[in-house]
Amino acid sequence: MTSPDTDPIRIVAVHGVGNSFGADICGTRLEELRTLKAAVWTQQLSSGLGIAPDRVNLDFAYYADKLVTGPVAQGAGDPDRLDDPLAQEMLAAWARELGVPEEVAQGHATVPLRALSSWVARRFDLVEGPLRVFIRLLFSEVAVYLRAEDAPERVTAREEVAARIARHQPRIVIAHSLGSVVAYEALHAHPELQPELFLTLGSPLALPRVVFQRLIPAPQHVGPGLRGTRPPGGTRWVNIADPGDPVAVPPKLSRFFDGIALDHTTVISPLFRFHHATNYLQSATTAATIAPYLQA
Image (cartoon, rainbow, N blue to C red; front, side, top):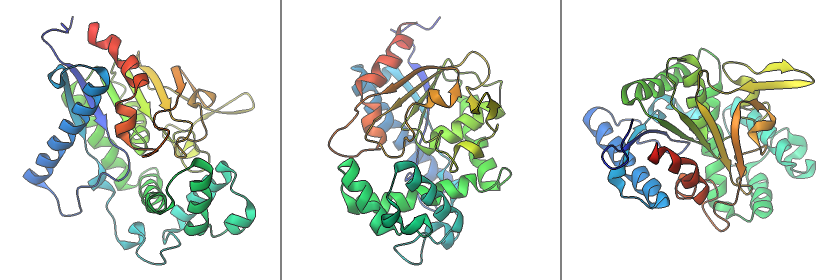
């Protein structure tokens, strides 16, 4: 049994979009940056828990370098459009889910970023400029990962996360944003990996036509609709989403997945950094979810 006084709790953190160290970063420098990221997440998490950072032994599963592709995925062309057709298709599906009016999205055929980001910013009380940059980044990375079941970027990202979990043997896997999709697939692909807790933060796992139907394993028909399922084994799944987070849509993953123990919709940050991992890691809801594992 783990002693809370002597043995820090072992955690693997899986990042979301916008965490790339750069296309040319590798080797020792990559490990240095990954260690720095682990330290930042440790500090933020321990701050929310109200404990010393040395009570947390956190490994940072870095996969962003696996999603680096050419200029199409990076969106180097028209600044008001995504150059990648799949990313543009996903953007249109997201717009429909958010209820963007047809006149804003031009029939959802082209979904210009300027009009869409302006509408989303007003609805969620966000700053439009940074939001537009984030939307471009989000759908570029999501499209690269979910382009095909056997896409090399998807396989290598998933296997990198699985390898980190296997190596660190954590009690808890914390996955944010796109990282929740990568970690979900990694845990399913490797049923021998059974952390005690799978904690998803700001997750888009249920986003229809963008993420949900593209998951591996694919959701199954149960009654009138499709249902996904929690990772195999005894892993407990808890989800936390801010109602003002437009990435974590639709709300309540438990409406789409079986086996979720707790599905929290709670305000994480009412003023700024709507989707940032920092706010989720330092939230009282996250602390309450993890705290029992410090005592067991």
